[in-house]
Length: 476
Image 1 (cartoon, rainbow, N blue to C red):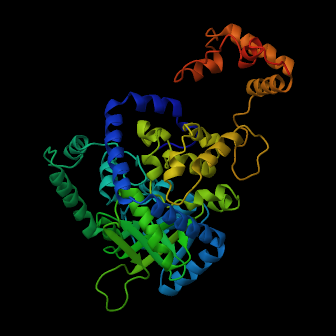
Image 2: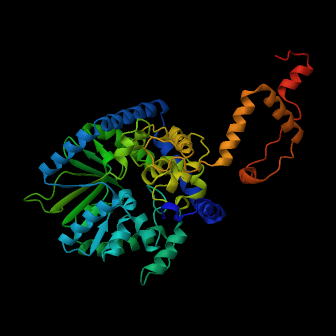
């Protein structure tokens, strides 16, 4: 996905809305995900209690984050895990490259990791002569097709089985065309297993890192993640610094919320807890484990009492599944790594309002994302703040690009609106003028753009106040 001003959001949206197959694929997939979540959380009261517990656990961790990160580092080192700190994605990429070169590795097998997408790691390694090979089935499909993930949890959610069959037939040598799902899975498994046997370095993300024990916890459904963390001699784990939890006992409520919200499961198929490299006498596991902890603007968010709530996110993707905008345009239209409601608040904070502030406009503010968020992130409120700060030239330093949308025309319009609503005589005059215009408002400038997807306003000939006067009411 592009970053910065290299993408045209409006054009992306128009293209996505015109793609009938995409809309059909997304609608079918989202209906299934929403229904599965509803089926696993059948008791609304119990769900609210669980959400409150998840919110409290994450808030407690954020309130102690600097200390917990230091504790995590100390415990990991004590367990034999090598810890690296990265201020930004460039630093994180350099760390991964150095580990690869230290092991004379030219290939990297990857488990699913949104942080690695945030780092644009695959492209970076390719530029340095190293091939990154995706092991997650969805990631494998889109990598074959030269795409990036369309969804946080289900990377290839925008593809149906017919399209996957075409990709396998075109991209994998000597692969016959088949639409049988089991056969497609077998083809992918065969292709990937050849890679697992020869690659020396594996990379994964981290769902939770427990400071108390120095444990890295990963969840997955396919088992391929273990091919990235267990088979290679070297395992590199990359994580955002907000993933740390205080205690091992914090895990069960969050795990229940994560798997239920993401895939509608009571628990995921595989829960991997990694606490050290291979010990003496053990027959498998990596000889080296490296943990790369990425900041990339997260500490800046943490310092803001309101924006820090963005860091509560456990990357379940359920806000995408329930978003009326995402469901219609998919993830690629957003032009950045994190799509959907979470992307609308996370990406502008990471990349600045000038680069990504437009994402916050892609919301009806229906509140669905906030209603379903398992850790109760007030996403609509944060979207509103980002929209406001796009016009506020002063700002407070938390998000760069304050006031990038501020312009003289809108400033004068709002000043005029203020005058009209402060002075009764002007208010009466403007109301009479609007009534006289009725349905004949000229569709020019901002109004023309606004009415592309909305009905033009139609003003009544008389105001409610005028009707009251005609009935004999008092003109106070």
